[in-house]
Image 1: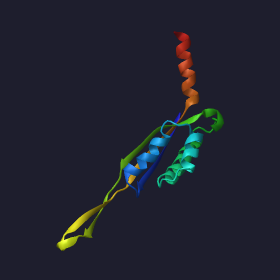
Image 2: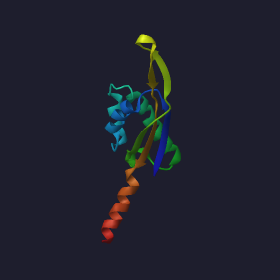
Image 3: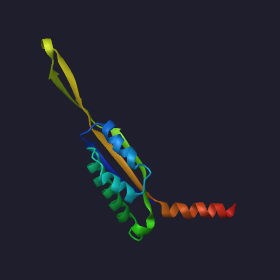
Image 4: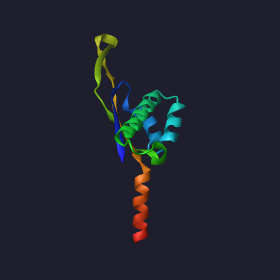
Length: 127
């Protein structure tokens, strides 16, 4: 039981966004939201909105399930590089240096621990 949310063409470098993404990978949703809320890095606010969107997608997908009993956690978060805007900056002696303005794509998967725990317990009882 999982839901996906995507964020495309975020105008910051993937390297900076991965620093924030690594903090919430594998965390429970409540803890991840608290981490992102009080983090000062620039990608934290966008990832907080994306996580809220993923939770909302999960609620829409599984309307009969309760959010409190689901034990949602961040199953997977990927930060890939997006398109790169190439600009030129004047340099000494008539030269030009290339500026690469990077962007990134973020994919966030939220899953429920509730369904997985019962399957593991059944496997342990059978052995």
